[in-house]
Amino acid sequence: MLEFFNVLASQAFLQNAVVVGLLASLACGVMGTYVVVRKIVFISGGIAHTVLGGMGIAYYYGWNPLHGAVVAALVAAVIIGLISLRYHQYEDTIIGALWAIGMATGILFIYKTPGYNVDLMTYLFGNILMVSQQSIHLLVGLDAVIILSVAVFYRPFLAVCFDEEYSRLQGLHVVSIYLFLLCLIALTVVILIQVVGIILVVALLTLPAATARHYARSLAQMMAMACLLGAGFTVCGLVASYTPDLPAGATIVLIAGAVYLIVTVFKGLLTRLGVKRPAS
Image (cartoon, rainbow, N blue to C red; front, side):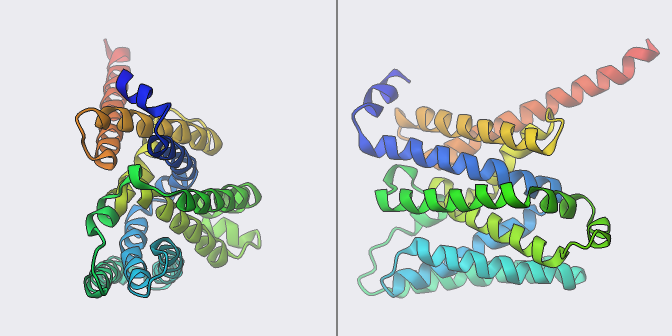
């Protein structure tokens, strides 16, 4: 641990990694709360894995893969959102097909890129230690869009997440609000890809919020707690992975998953004890 913090003071790549981790924690804490409350983890996974198609196409034409990821994520969010709302009976199958098509398209374009020299593992599993300054600027912009949008549309998002029918009766355009929410989740996915990659993005998106849900008394409190937990998981993961030279993204998710399981089991035991006490 001391070695990590000694190097952190002098190495820009570690400083960038911590900055990206904190930016990702802010986005995943806020949007992950909506994903957990709305129970749309599978939809988020579909968006995340479809993104590889956009990254592969962008890389093939010499563009920034992150730009391709943003476009693909937004397109996937709208398509999957409309499918979820209008073809609910076939939702799982169609999202699964888009999931597979996006991954396959990305792999094919990356493979056929002239002078193939990109590490596919970086996209799939992330490499927070190799994030460029340009990527950080893009992530700051995405974070700003997400936070500002949630601040403005907090109540409509809250209404749509908890009671669609009541939202319609109140005159809210549920379809537009829901699609906009999915687009913000898509932007969050792009941010998290830099940290843990496409394969593990859903875990980091949901685990901090799911852990916070055990103790939060309101949606806003859940968001705040999820942001703090996400920051803690990210920093602890970076510290724990540095000395033994482990993959940072996988270590971050492993810590987040372990904490979630411990908290869930502990909460369950307390609940069972609370039920038994009156009878004794």
